[in-house]
Image (cartoon, rainbow, N blue to C red):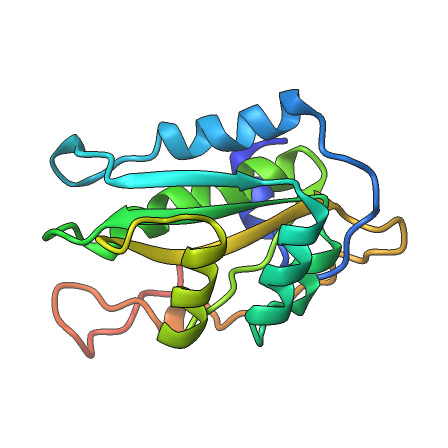
Length: 173
């Protein structure tokens, strides 16, 4: 899949086929995170791969907005050093995993974890207290009836400014 096509068509997926994700496809997703850029090239993320059905169920029950994690064949917890690392670095790794998964026919959904849910999931996965759990991303193949409907987007002219804020984009953009 071309990069632009992946960017334009990627959608959030909360339902997955029960089919397992082969090691080769999972490795591509993990490699995508590995190659993500980071501040000072510190690569501050750690990835915890979860395939155990009971752990996936427990994570799904804990994450109030991520119950669908329980139905995914695999999930990846994105963990980062506390230090002074911008969380944006984790977001870059996360986005690359999402796009690679999409190009492989899979989907995922970012799950927000308030502090109480984060601490419980960290316990489930034995994540040390000095690390931050950013999210748990479930991965799986999109259902056959999944429709990648276009999501309305604002025109560029509404969000792009030239040289200074308020100087709207010319019609050619």
